Image 1: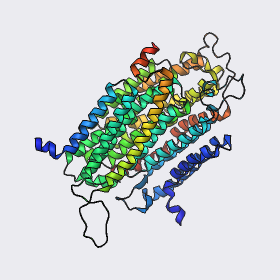
Image 2 (image 1 turned 180 degrees about the vertical axis):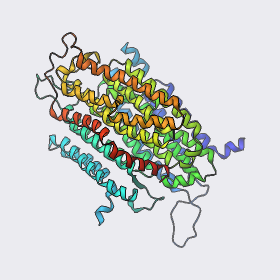
Image 3 (image 1 turned 135 degrees about the horizontal axis):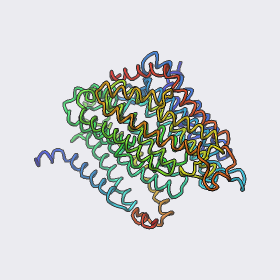
Image 4 (image 1 turned 135 degrees about the vertical axis):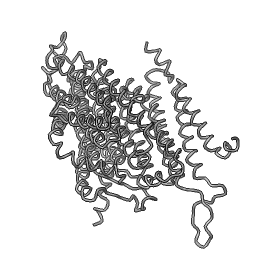
Length: 119
Length: 511
C-alpha cells in the first residue's frame, strides 16, 4: 500500500493540491483567497501533466548527430503546460481586475460582507 | 494553388487579424470599429460557407497546422457538422455585431432618452475593446468546432471563456461584475477538470489527436483510466454547457450582460460545451461510449430531464424578462443533452437541429429584450403590458421566435422536438418523451404569457407613454432577420435534414 503510494507520488501530490485549491475556492468567502485557490488548482493540474512526461535520468529531447540516442523526457506535456500557463495567467489577470472592480463597488473583497451590505 | 491549401483556417485567421487591427485603427478613425468587425464577420461567413461544397465531396476537410503531420501536429478537421456550426456561429455573430452598433453607442443628444441604459456605462474607450473581444470570441468558437485535436479544443475553449467573462463584465457596473465573478468561479475549475482529463487520457494513450485517440482508447489496457477521464471530461464540459446541477452561473451571467452579448452567450457559447461533449464522445471515446458508458449516460439523461422541468418552472417564476430567457436556455440545454444521452441517431439529429433552432430563436429573444431595454429601460415582465402599441415590430419578432421555442407545428422547433420524441420512443424511454412534451407545455406558459401581455393588455399606470417608438433600423432589422430565419428553418428543413443526417451517421462511424 505504502509502496503503491510512493510509486505514484506525483499523482497523490497533484490530487492533494487540487483538493486544497478546490476547498479554498468553495469555502473561503474572500475573493483574493478564491483566486489563490484557483491558481493552486491550476498548478496541481500542470504539475500532474508535467510529471507524466518525466523520466528518471532522462535527457533533454534533442537529437545530436552521431551520438547514440539516450532515453529522453517527453517534451509534449511541457509544451502543453506552457500553453496552459499562458491561459492561466490571463485568467488570473482578468479575475484580479474583476476583483478590483468588485472592491470599487462594495468597498470589500469579501463576498459575504458584500452581501450583508446590500441588505 | 498555394492559397487554396489553407482554406480551412481562413475564417478563423481573418477574425483574429481584424481583432488585433481594430484597436490600432480606432486610434485615428474613431468610428471604424463596427464596420471593420462587421466586414470581418461577413468575410468569415462567406469563407465558412465556401467550405461546405468541399466537405460534401470528401466527407471532411483536414488541415495540418504548420505542416506537421497528425498525430504529431495539430490537425484542423472540419466535418459537415462542424461546417454547419461555423456558418451558424459567424452568421449570428454578424447579426449581433450589426445590432451592437447603436446598442453600445451613446445617444445622439442630451435630451435623447434613447439608449440611456448603456450610454453612460460604455465609455467611448471601451468600444474598440468590445468589438475586439467580440471577434476573438467568434474566432475561438470557430476554432473549437473545427479542431481535430483535444488539447487544441481546450485552448480554444479557454480563449472563448476568457472573452465571455470580459464581455459579461464590460459595462463595469455592479451587477455585471458580480455575474462575471460567479461565472468565472465555476468555469475556471471546470476548465481545469477538462485539462486534467486530457492529461489522464494522454498518460494512457500517448496521443492528443481525436481520430488517433478513438483507435487507442478502444484497445487501451487501462479501461478504468479511460472511464475516469471520460467522467471528468463530461463534468468539465457540462459546467461550460450549463447542464442542470452545474448551471447556477448561467442565469446571472446571461441576464446581466449587454443584450447582444447575452444573445451570443445563450445562442452559441453554451453550445460549445455541448459540442465538446458530443465531439469527444463520438470520436475520442467512440468505442467506450457505444458499449460501456450506460451508467454515465443514464445520469446525464436524468440531469437533462430535471433541467427541462426545473428550467421551465424557474422561467415561469421570474419577474425580469432577461432572467426568464436565461432560465429558458437552461431548459433547452436539457433538450439537447437529452437527445445526446439517448445514444440514438434520430434523437441526436433532433438535438443537433435543436441547437440551430434554439440558437436562432434565443438570439432573437435577447435582441428583442435589448431593444425594449434600450428604448424604455423597463426590465420586468409586468412592464411589458401593452408594449406592442409602441413597438409592434419588436413584439412581433418576439412572438415569432416564441412559436419556435414552444414548438408549434409548422415551425422549426416542432421538427426538432418531433425527432427528439421519436428518438425517445424508439429507445423505449417513454417517460423522457413525456417530459419533452410537458416541457413544451411549460415553455408555452412562459413564452405566451409575455406575448399575451405585449399584445392584449393595456399598459399599466402611465408606462410606455414616454417611449417614442421602434428602435433604429440597425437594431430592428437584425432582430427580424433572426425571427425570419427561425421561421424559415422550419420550411427548409427538407434541405437541412438529409445532410445533417449524413453528418451524424459519419459521426457514428467515428470518422
